[in-house]
Length: 360
Ligand SMILES: *Cc1c(COP(=O)(O)O)cnc(C)c1O
Image (cartoon, rainbow, N blue to C red; front, top):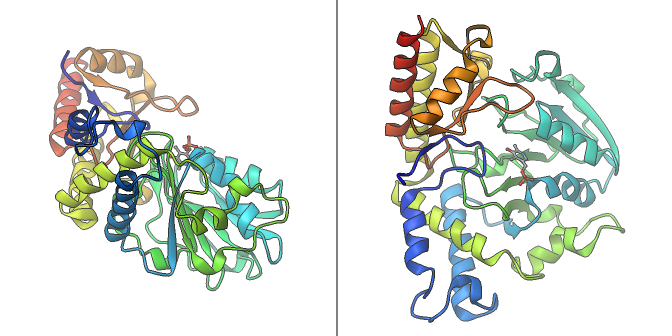
């Protein structure tokens, strides 16, 4: 069977070159006579893999030396608890912006450990925009300030990061990490599940400023304490070895593409192609507020949702799969992460044009 055009929101399409490399190396990695999955995580060969993954990631993200990079498990969702457990350590309160389902979950989890102040929310319009932030509403005594940089379900993203002064900014960057330049110094902590822009599900990458380590709440489980992972080079226990190896292959691939700045240009071009079509279509329209549109996730509908089901069916029959919107929003969503080539987006737009012409 041919490979399909996969617009899944995550886990999602990986670069074909990465899958082929993994296939080549599956049975016998680098003349070891074994698969990466079969290696001790403390072996010389595996240490070289995780060190190279970290080094490549640091290079791609331009991570400053006073930040640790951790390869953890438990998905981004575990970070909803780990962030407050580790960082609610001065005044036991934090500011959050509610921009969707993931932010809501982060708020709910953090509320179990301290006083959470929701400084702004876009819930009134099904999260289809990024709320304007009023600095007067920020708590200068907050232990941190949490945002979701890209909202996977609604296709919104911040054009500008909030200025939180001395309060560390924490970013859930799961769905736009490595898609465009972010100044890591603007953040105290960044976390991202791997299954959108970095690899397979099962790995979560955390970038944390060193001065934020070492003050976790007393009852924090050892496995949830960043310091334990940082002190042990992400080897406090057996790390998700194969998942980290896949991240390394994706980082190598991204470097081959010219790195983050180069892929960002392609991502902007991809998104523009799709949004320009949506803006000029009589049948289709985008659902996110124009000024806050994501370049990774593009939600759209047919007029009054009338032809959504028919479109999804015909699209799938033509090899365009996983275009169904999130169950809470309906409609369609094309996730066009780093691994999606421009040509695939062009093919989708051509197909949408044809569908529109046939349903006048
Ligand atoms: C996918 C996603 C999550 C959840 O990730 P898990 O690895 O399933 O826990 C959290 N936040 C954002 C922004 C996401 O896109």
